[in-house]
Image 1 (cartoon, rainbow, N blue to C red):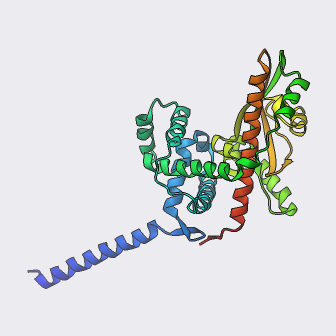
Image 2 (image 1 turned 120 degrees about the horizontal axis):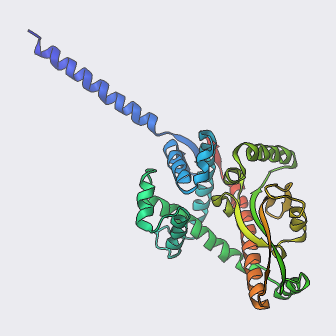
Image 3 (image 1 turned 90 degrees about the horizontal axis):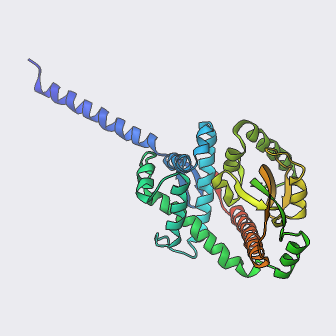
Length: 315
C-alpha cells in the first residue's frame, strides 16, 4: 500500500514543477527589447505592431518576417518619440472627431463596408478597434501639433502660383499627369549616404518599391507604400520634374536633395489629357498641394529634431 505522505510529496513536487514552469514561461513570453527615453518596448509590443502593420498593409505580407519585425521596431520607436512629445501638450482621450474619418479611410482601403466589418477583420490579427484608435490618435494629434507650431511659417505666394499656372499654360491645354510613389530618407553624415542608398536600392530590387517605402521612408506616405497618387506636372518643382522626365514607367530617380533629407521617386504611370478648368480651381488645387508639401517638410524636420534628443537603446 502506498504511503499517504509519499503521495502528498509527489503531488507537491508536481505542483511546484507546474508552478515554476508557468513562471518561467511568463518571464520568457515578455521581455524588454528597446528603451525610448523612459518608455519600454517589449517583444509582445513588437508582435502586436507586426500584426497591426500586416493588417493595414497587404503588400507587407510579401516581405520576410525579419524585415517586417525591423519595420515594427522602427514604427514603435517613432510612435514612442511622438507620443512623448505630444504628452507635453495633449491628453490622449480618444475623443478627436477626426479619428472616425481616418478609420473610414482604413476600412475602405481594405474593401470593407463599415466599422463593424473592420472590427471583425482586426480580430483575425488579435487586434481591437481600441488598439487602432489609440495609434491613429497619436498621428492625428501630431499633425495638429505641427500645424499649430508651423501654420504661420507655411508661406503661400498666390500671385507666384497663379503666374506659374498661366506660364505653363495649365488652362485650356493638354495636361500631363504623373502617378508617383516616394521614399524620403535622412542620413547623419555624407559617409552614410552611399551605404543607405545602396541598402535602399537592394531592398527595392528584392522587396519592391512599396515595401521598401514602408520600411525606410520617413514621409507620411510610407503608410501607403509611398504612394502619392496623380500629380499635375505644374505642381512639381523644375528640379523634380526634370528628373521625372528622364524616366520610363516603372523606373526610379536617383536620390534628390530636398530640405527634409533625400527623395527617391518612382514613376508608376503617366498620362496626358485635355481638361478645361477655371483659374480659381487650378489655383486652389495648387495651393493645397503646396501647403501639404510644406507641412510634411516641417513635420519631418521637427521629428528629426526631437529624435536626436531622444535616448534610444536596444536591450
